[in-house]
Image (cartoon, rainbow, N blue to C red; front, side, top):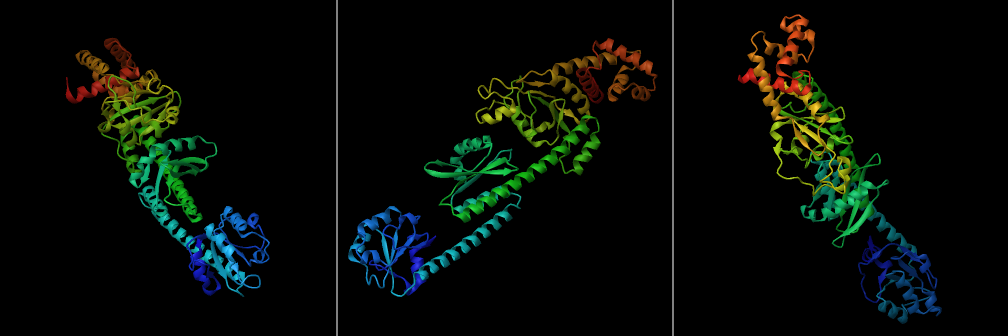
Length: 514
């Protein structure tokens, strides 16, 4: 913005101050020349108005009425060109200007008005160039910050410092908010509510509202017309065109960063899914080799299997939220373990996750207060009664070793199919005691080695040929023994629930004895 002081200094002797004897720092948005009695229809406000004053010399207009019209149009500076019409500022005009607080400057005789206009626009061009260079410098700094590991905090901090205010980035998909400076956290509750409104718009756009009498501007961060987050700004000053260019650049950088994270998350999800599928099929060594080659963490040595089922599909990014507050005799906080594991895949309308057992902790309360209505719809909750109407069912296994994954997976599949909504069901401890009794009955049968028979049969997942070959038996002999097993323990060994717990009991007996 160019001020009268800057213009007067640049023009030197081509412009003189009026009766006050000095120039003020009042801003000027342009220079306009007019000899009309009422030039206001051609003014936008804020210009330096130049006139030769012929209308005053001829007595065509009342100076007080003329100045009042200029005042109503927000004209703050009047330039009088001396020459054929006026040799000095008329006293009535000077008095009217003084009463209206309108500053007067003088253009000496023989000085072309074009000099005034040319000087103004030269200053404006230099100012624009300076703003552009500052803007380019800021944008370059932002681009560099975007390449850092802490890209989002660095960009948000740099933008807030550039604007002299505060800034916050509220991502839509799980990254966590970034606020700078930390004192701006007081504004975030309302910012979060306003960002949810932007998420719901078909055509998201910039929004403005007030917090504590301070203007706040929200800019949606878009990738392919989808809102990936919202940039909230509490600028410490009026935004200039250069500021808006910087803000646009920051939105683009945040969008690029979000897309990069999404692509990385998609790649990790695909590889993690492949590792998990290998593990549940009994290919644990192959699963661990793939995890190592892909830069993923190792499959935990002690883990728990979790199955989730909802009315609709559950996005992996919301899996941790979908189990919050589920009822059950032994509730667990599964959020940290779910967020930490990349080993998740979809199977028969359910999500199956391999969790690090060390990260699964007992849950002491059911937190619903910070869940927003938009999330309830995704997670299968009713917005009216979120705590009473969850649609998610979950089944969690006991702690197991990697070699036990295939058997437990089969039991988990059967359990999640009939698990009640709103419940976190545990893959039963009572079944484990039953399985111990089954193993004891097999050991006590003296006429044949039923323990080795069942172990081989389960190891080969009910494949008669492979189990018979390993045992050195004819297939018919193996079939007879398995019929005897079913009769002896009183259950169907091909039932996934039975086979899973029996396998675990056999492994426990092999390691620890009876």
